[in-house]
Image (tube, rainbow, N blue to C red; front, side, top):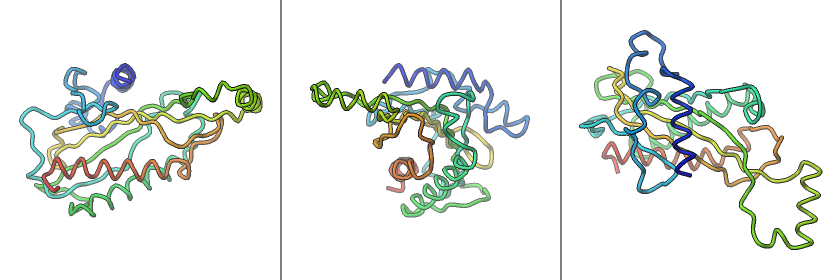
Length: 226
C-alpha cells in the first residue's frame, strides 16, 4: 500500500504539473499539493493509507470558518474505470460530497461560508485516480463447489470487484491562497461491484458518508474545535 500511495503522489504530480485548482496566473505559481516535493509528505500514524502535509510553522486554530469547494475529477484518460463514471453522475457525487462535508463541519461547530474573510480556510479536494481490484480471496474460495461458482461468475462477467479511489485535499488561507495543509489518500470501497457496472452516487453514497465524517473530524481537530 505504501508503494501505491507513492505512485498516487508521483502520478498526480506528473499529470498536473501545475495546480488543477488554479484559475489565475498568481494561483499558478503558488505552492499546492501538486507541486510540493514528495519528501514534504509525512506518513499518517493513524492511517497507513494516507500521507499528510503541514506547512512548517503553520497552525489552523486561528481560523473560525471554512469554504468547502466541490471536488474535482481529474480524469487521466478515457478508458478503463474513468469511462464508468458519466459526467452527470460525477456532478451528483461532487454536489453530494460538498453538501455532506459542509453539514459534518457544521455539526462540529465550524461555520461554513461561501465568501472569505480574515479567519477563513478554503478546502479543496480532487479525485486523482480510480481502479478496480478483486477482493482478497479466502481459503474457502478454492473449495470445489465455491470454485465452480466463482468460475461461472467470471464467465458471466459477474465477478465482484472493489473500487480503489485516490484523492487529494488541501487547506489554504481563503484570503491569501497560501497552502497550509493537505492529505493524499487511497481508499478501497467496502461494497463490491460488477467490473463493468457504472460508478454512481448510489454506489458511493455510504463511502462518502464515512469519508466526510472522518474528514470533518480531522479538520476540526486541526482547528482546535474538538
